[in-house]
Image (cartoon, rainbow, N blue to C red; front, side, top):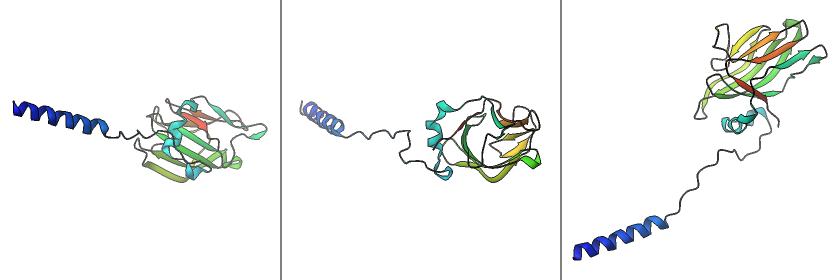
Length: 168
């Protein structure tokens, strides 16, 4: 009988201790710090804007000039679901509108998978954002840099990759 009483006493003490422990709040998936530059953008900032990403093509240049400009920042989700960012460095009109940019692709845990500076894609070529290189294989690239005329250039997401211009 004494063992049963001790058991109930111990059980109620244990329940009291466990129920009085403070639960830690789960971390929010929304980043707290203000982003003011390309260098400040982290994987969690991009993930928080996932709903803004689109697979729609957009004009990079037209008869009136450049639509995408140096210092514009695009965020993306690759065809295999990894987040990243790219900063437009230049668009060379004299060289078939070659696009020069910086890019960072993140692993799922937020660490960097691949980072590159002064990368480029030539007019009418495709680019893989996980390997950070021009590529010609079907179903292996994330966007095409295509030309429809001497003045019109399109940025075309491919293979379920999605992009959006980042607004600071």
